[in-house]
Amino acid sequence: MKSKIICVLFLILKLSSINLSAQSISAETIDFQLVKSPQVTIDENSRNYKVTVMSPYNVTADDVIKKSKIDHQKALADYDATVANSVKDFDQKTKDYDSDVLKAKEKFAIESADFKKNTLLERLTLTDQGKNPKLVLPAKPYYVKPALPIYQQPNLNDFTIVDNNVLASQINIAGFTRGVGYVDISVDIKAVNFQDNTGQTFANQPTKLVIKVNGIEKINNTFFQEYTFLSSSPSNNINKPLEEKNHLSKVIKFLNDYINNIFGFQVETKSVKILSVKNKGKFDYLERADIYVKTNLRKMQASNSDVNVTAFANLQKGIDIWTQTLSKIEYKNDKADFNDKIGKFIYFNLINLNIALNKKADAEKYLNQLQENLVYIKLSYDEANELKNMEKDIYQIKK
Image (cartoon, rainbow, N blue to C red; front, top):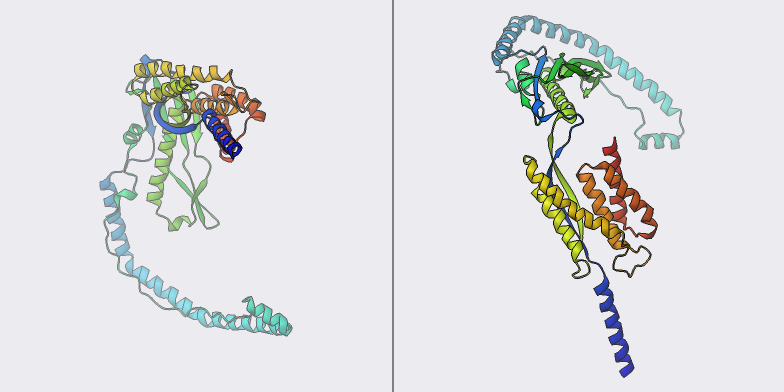
């Protein structure tokens, strides 16, 4: 009996020892703001721009209403002719009806004769499949007199009520001042062209962008020349004014994104998952790294560069602790305090953090180091998928 008690106590002590030495890893997602660096950096004292737009758009609300009333008066003037044409069309459909009925009956007779040539089993099978002959008669024409045109106030939201100055005001460079033209932007937007193809509508809107920096031409490109899908209906069945307005908005958004990716200092809202180890004593300095990183990420302010300089400096202290700890990892010893589990969470932190900070080179460096040690590191199914996503993010940044 005493030996059994000793064995149970020994087992309890052993399990307690395992729990004490195990690392408890937790995760937290941190949101922060970051100013994305442009492809081309302009000196701070020269960050000013002007925009000139040339386009066919110079329509006011009064213009739209005036045209709507003119169209209504024309519809009234043409009403008698519209009714006469509708009667003519109905008479023709009535004349064609008897002929169409005869053709349908002849077709049914031919199909029935062919159907009867099949065996009984074949006829039953075709009937079950709904492939037996059916008499389909055309609908008998029914005359509906066109309604008298009634004037309706146009929906101004459907129309492109802008001019070149308004369009120019919609193009901005983040972090720059509008006015003086150190960066001189010239945009030539053509009208939308609608094209029908197999019952669908496609559209293009050639748009030329020329950008000069300090008088030197840096960009000269034309976009939206290719016809792209717009609607599954033909162009005479779509609301063209609304579609043109929407397409123009698409063009302006594209220009803003394109220009700002090259020159703008854009604010990005980022999220990053940070893993932490909580065991007291042995991992206190790793917990300190956790505090450095999370606290200073939250301190970052897109509009305050001085605060960010300090935040990045303190953030680096946490990163340094992580990288120094990597040299202590014993990948082949699961019982070590600094085993593959600690190495894994540090590498995941370093890769995810550098991706979030747009530091592709550093993220790729730690990814390569992790891959070299993967033979010793156990990844769960979710961790393996997360690693694949990190790889995609790194090489998307690389492009």
